[in-house]
Length: 353
Image (cartoon, rainbow, N blue to C red; front, side):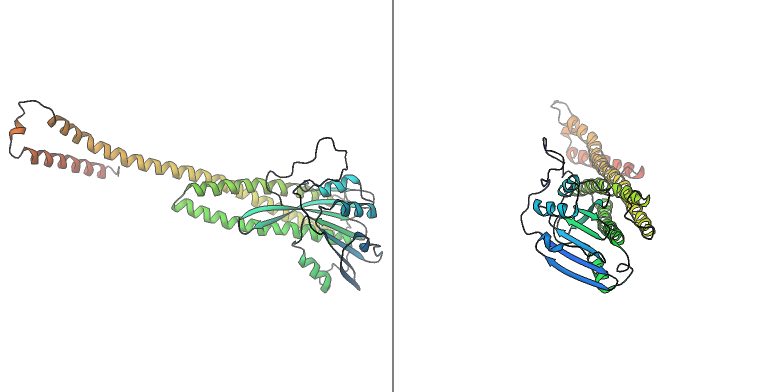
């Protein structure tokens, strides 16, 4: 999983096409699933080796999903079987690849970023999805097990929709579309967090509120970095720069493009809202400081004449008539109380307090 500053690409001195995992070092078994289907045919299986995925059926669409790209030998084996360019294999191993599409003679490579929301930490992370699209196959590489593609698998199993009648390009579209649609789920959660922060801003803003605003602003930068290139990916496919997508699939891609624009608009709206929230926080803290200073100023102003009186009668002159007076002490206290109350009345009428 990646956050904002993960995934600086490459190591100095390596030859282009070198297969070295660029990301968090992991170990574990790579899970490979295969679904082959056509209008009247369906086969689904879990395999343990790359060789079990082949040969591919010429009369069906084969979807091979690989969970775990940290095994270099598995990626190399698929590259040899399908004739994939070494630079594409390098991109599959680079786990922070910028979303893009590359067209080759008999296949296309599409790199996307799938978003995930950590419920415990409420942080947004990204996982790379690499798609190899051929004439009759789609191979997807994911960083780890678990994805949002179960609705697609269910469509294939039940035969609902047009997926069993369509080709591999339609399956690739569905993968792109559901990846983009899941962005709305993440943005909805972020929107709920923003509402909570707005309520805190109105009632009682604290340093934790400021910290939450800054975290959300970082996440917006992170999301913008991921989503904006996807618009270009779908736009290039629409312009027929990738010849493997049929004319019948292009209208669906336009719908996915519209969804991407909606996601971008939502992100930009959230960024503007967060900037406004930061201004509100600073204004609120400034107002609170002003209120405190006003109270302190009023207190100081009230005590100025009282301090003057106390200072006068605290002088050690021998001849001070009031000092000899029996009720002098009480008279001074009464006068000081009258001065303080009088000033409070004046401040109240002028609405200074």
